Amino acid sequence: SYQRLVPRRWSAPYNNLGFRDREAALRVCPGDERRGRDPALSTNLEFRASDSSASPYLQLGVILSAGMQGVMEQLPEPTVTHEDLSLLEATDLASMGIERLPFSLSDALDKFEQDEESRKLVPSELAGLYLKHKRHEVDIMKDLGEAAICERYAAVF
Image (cartoon, one colour):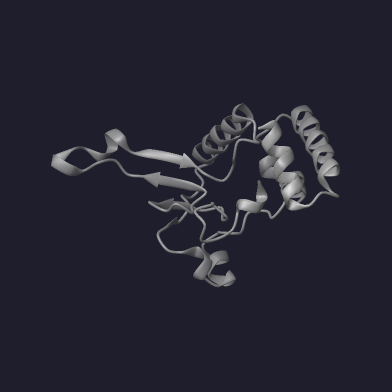
């Protein structure tokens, strides 16, 4: 799953909000404006940073909770990107609040475990069980090569 998060492959490798950007983690797809149509009636918002190995229920719950938290706390809107982020320097990305998504499941779990804001979005008992379950998954896969890992995931998902 994390092997696909590579820049310039329409894979959502950054934590950005993009307009018509196939690489954005959260992508705004404006609706059809032809023939005077109101684009708001058919605008889509896509979350692109995960794949079928993620629980859609947990994923949607966390996305909605994060959005509600942002509204309730009146957090600033993220910068909407239009450019190829892989061409920007790390300092430019950092100034926009953009960073590369984790390179592995283990890195993602570490990041989740250390991020207090993210942990607030999930009840502590569920977070603990999730971390335990996914760390077991990491342990099962640790000695496998890329092809074997892909085969295992393909068999399950």
